Image (cartoon, rainbow, N blue to C red; front, side):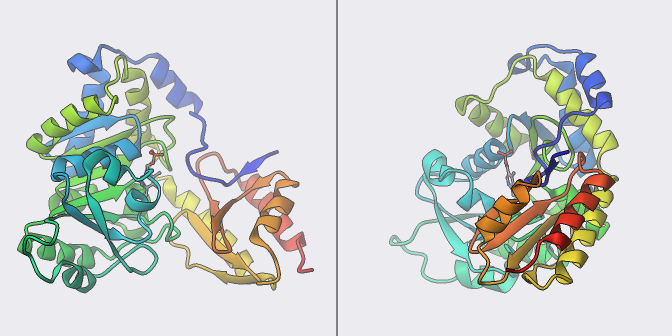
Length: 342
Ligand SMILES: *Cc1c(COP(=O)(O)O)cnc(C)c1O
């Protein structure tokens, strides 16, 4: 038995999802004639109360298209120093849109409205780039699945409004936040200009993300998606997995969260663990004692068929997901306890 806790992207489609995919009605989505893609987009837009939505092959492309839609080359965008758009999209903001990132020194990937205010303040003359866009990420990936306080997001919206900034949400794991905080997609649809969500993370689809926004933003994004090479043809086979995921895999995220909580509790009791970041959703980040090397620890677990990720700076990451069973968690906990400080 391999216990793969590397990411919530490693899931395989369930039988129900496979059946939905095999029975999908398809067409050519570049000509907008794939009924299943259209129905996924309509469904997502309805859920969030937003005008329109567009299916993308990846979350990276959806975020990058959003940045492109909101900016012109030379503009400045604001994001946390740990954000995915800055750290893990291959420098795409600079490459695709020619923008610079003003990094905010947040806490676990989350900054405050006041921090944004100070970052935005200052001279606005010919020397400085135009400020154009604020990107936030919920849940935070590098921040260990932490959820933003919705009130803070509303206050940030006011700062955006006062400074004529667009507001984009990288919601790769937004559904984890909604389930953990008992919030609704509508609440988010109301305050953000654009939102990206991943179907291929906790929701368990094999491929796909969605970008949500106004008709105007999505019309621009459609053009950008084509330019990026993301126009897909009989994409309904993939979109049907997305529909299945939205209908069947949201409520169950709480099971992933419970399992992560259980792992957190065991880690806290182990003498070789220095620190565990507070667990709120499906990501557990912890540090081992200084004299232990995080990579050695990960290698030792790999020999037991337990797969974890090194996050740098001595951090180790565990992600629970759809394909992690009770037995797998028991195996993990057993090995964590057996491993001893040497
Ligand atoms: C995974 C992820 C993305 C997009 O990733 P893809 O692998 O390109 O789908 C974007 N933002 C965050 C926070 C993520 O975790």
